[in-house]
Amino acid sequence: MSERLTRLAATAAEAAGHAPAFARRLAEAGLTPAQLAEAGGLNRLPVLKKETLMEMQAKDPPFAGFLACPMEDVDHVFASPGPIFEPMLKGDETAIGFDMMFRAAGLGRGDVALNTWAYHLVPAGLLFGQGARSVGATVIPSGPGQTELQVQLIATMGVTAFMGSTAYFETVADAFADRFGGTQGHWKLTRAFLGGEPGDWAGKRKRLEATHGITTHGCYGTADLGLVGYEEAGKPGYNTHPDRLVQICDPASGAPLGPGEPGEVVVSTLARGWPMIRFGTGDLCRALSLGEDGFADRIGPVEGRVGAAVKVREIFVYPAHLAGLADNANGVQEARMSVTREGNRDLIRIEYTGAEGREDILSEAFTKRTRLRADTVVRVDAFSIGGALDDARTY
Image (tube, rainbow, N blue to C red; front, side):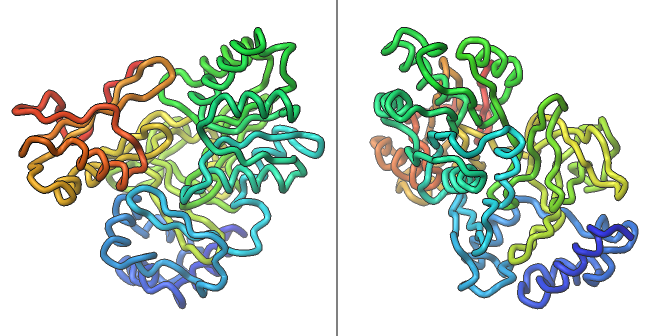
């Protein structure tokens, strides 16, 4: 019996006594918390899909019976689009593990980090900021937008590290180069901690590094679990967080797959308070190697998604978001969305059928549900978009 499975059983036992939804998951699978420590016991628990958690929270808000600690133990509650509510407990100085990414990259005292991730409701801004502070860096919590101000901050504050999406880094770097005649030799930036993109993200990172004289760093994490994997110089993929039991599983059966086989990332966390055990992230990747206890100790990059969700401007959009728009816009029969790519930016087009003149109402309803702004909203007699969500981006 592995030490981590023993810890998992203890975490599950505490959670089952406080979180009725988790207790039901175990009971429906015919499991006790202790049995999760037995060989094969964890694999008997069906995978909890993120879309299912969203549906459960809609029916039983806010946490659908999964919170396994008193509310006074919760430090932050994030509200990701869906909405999905995710608690972060007090006393966690690691930012749910994000400190590991910065420590592995060599960030520390003397570094000044510009954090362009959003701080409003979603977790990225707070987690990146707290993780960087925990290793000694000074953080400027700028959030996204106001590109000219970001350029000024980089120049005047001696910024050495950038945090944000890959697309926004390109926007800021181009604006800096336009103002100062270039980046290399004109700024102190040496590191960029970037969000992943579909397509040849590794190739894009190499181009950015060569152009701007920096090193780029990435990680794999979710709002529900915190950091799951982080990069280590000279090694492929991501080292997995020791408190995350990571499996790559068949998306249909939930059965764990061997190294090199593509499947869904399924994670069981050892952290107390929010029992995301056998939680399916919806991301597809491969295990590069397994540890002695059979869990992935290194995983490859994300290769795609399971299901119909589409990631747009770092935010997931689900078919349920589009299906619900008609409820908020009287006279709309159906709405569909397509996303295309122009330069560094994702472009969102929404088509709808039904009454005329509902564009502004529909646009506002879409923003409320997803926190994204549509570039085009148009009424049509017949859809040009196939299905609720169409990802037509090319990279």
